[in-house]
Length: 234
Image (spheres, one colour):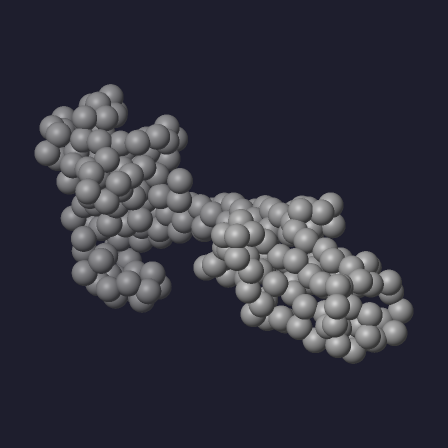
């Protein structure tokens, strides 16, 4: 049977009604009753507004269905926002959005965990590279061979050797303390950790060591404008 229909929308709680922009009126062949068709048309229009970008309010909707190809006389059936079928549509959409959000949050957690693991691996590999390079230098291996094997410059090798004394030892102790203890680090905490390891370091020296660890990626600022650091990847 052929039905004529009309769909209207209201954005002021039913005070005024306008044709629904997406599908204001038309005709449809259906084996359903006029009442079923009115409900289905309303569901479709309601879902289209729920799926929109949210820039406009959903408002209220109503549908009218006439038996025959023309909207003549009183409608054979009507449907309006507020019935159980509309709440079912809204509940279904809420569930879909909640599922999407849960999936995105899980993907972010997995990405954060992978990034933290990669950062830890980088720090460990960098420490091992430095230790092996220093071992080679102590065994009088030519600097050019060390630099070539480490994919670094000869200046990097010389700096490692220059730092092998006090500063390198302090850096290694502070790096290890940060890795083992975690949490946030400022100059005072770094000074206390280094003095506990037997180094005579003031807060100025501790700040320089924290900046060095930050430059090599072992730690990162807890806040862009603060001098407080945390282990990288946390």
